[in-house]
Length: 204
Ligand code: GAR
Image (cartoon, rainbow, N blue to C red; front, side, top):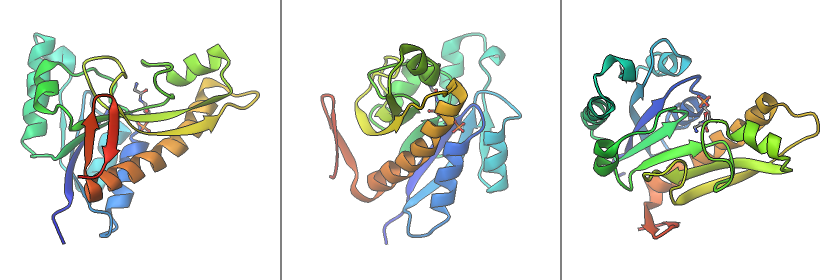
């Protein structure tokens, strides 16, 4: 059997998407190894999940650096020390800079709780609810220099229900998001993927 895909996951909060990857990767038939977890803040459940799984962690807080570029370079160096094949931002609430993007171009994925290109940014579920859409969902995409604009790897649709709050909609989206992430990262590990303009295809 070939080596598992080496994945570094970046988190800022509860880390339930990370946990879904960790749970999947505990099955030897899932060809993915989460080799490290990075964060932009301390004392979050996402880091605790990694520690419980015995996975190395690192934290780089933006306010601890003189410039955003210095933070970006530290993040790039820490991620690179684990030699990942793929980096997954799973609830990582920071935009990376040029150093990171150029090092991981085409190998850096982000999961977003809306159906792109609708509702980019930090408040996908609340923005979808305020707009009155009846269907929202989640999007896994290849990060480019825009905000949630990169080529789409996978999406899942989720209904908006009467009486939803931003929180209840987000929780419903996250249930689909975890399954989407596990499925897509598994396919990338087994089949590879390519990006042609805006179109992503699995396969080598
Ligand atoms: C996920 O829904 C993710 O898409 C979202 O944060 C949540 C993290 O959940 N990310 C963004 O909104 C980024 N724009 P988790 O920490 O439980 O995995």
